[in-house]
Length: 352
Ligand code: F6P
Image (cartoon, rainbow, N blue to C red; front, side, top):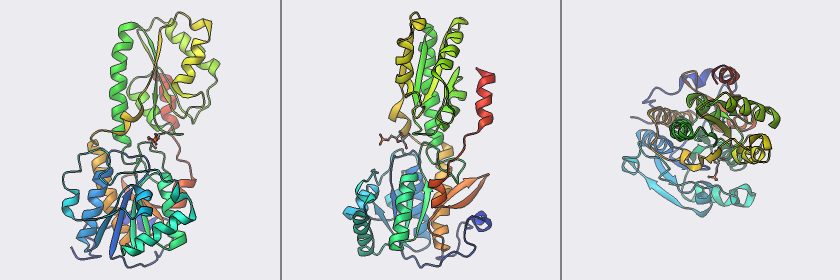
């Protein structure tokens, strides 16, 4: 495919996006740098594959930056070709590795990173990660004029500007699969289980795996629930001679997650006779092969990100909204809060 020949048809919905300047700045990209940063997410590899292959199809050179911003500061760069991304579409983790960099939060760290990019002739970047990754990318763009387009990669699904993030669908399915397993043992013992899921300060995983797993109660940070109300609800559920009760708790819930609620229940004599356990699902939610949905999303976004960069866009994230790719300025992605679906929350009250 010729460079700028739009082999995959571009990302047309970006053009009508009112949040963007109508005419993107033009920059001439010859060598693309790509990296994954922050918490890894299943599908990051599929996104890397799409990014690398789209760049090569447009006659760009591609450099992989290992360990995110840490590797950018250390000059841990690796040349990439078609083969570097063979047989990875189906794998979890990230072949380029990831890190959370504190050095990159400093001006000195970012200057060292920019110097390395210049040394390797990298003149455009694709950043795959979450809001921390995009804050860093934006700073690099502002302070050093390096064009950058972001791809949303996080299991938390907490990014404004995309309906779903790469990795979310896989994490959700992993959480549901594990809730099903816990349901079996909870049922066998007539137990109450508090199950904590990831999501940082957002409740997308909790809300959706709670519904999919048939939880009797779902606690998320987006809604404030008094401990007394929770106790009342749990007590009435357990007294209704249920065989088991599952409460899904988002890690960011204001009551201290599953352990916080467990402690409050154990300290209350009313719950003396209730057989209760808590489980934190933790990092198993981040691993494993990406689902079909995540592989396709990651592939689409990887292609669209490179095309957006070649079209002259910078400081934006490519997302997927209502079935179309869409560009959103990075500053909006990390400063605006994505809302949960409150209709889903109502649904849990009817279904439990
Ligand atoms: O952002 C992804 C995520 O898995 C969150 O859900 C979680 O709070 C956090 O990362 C855990 O980070 P770490 O792996 O650095 O402990």
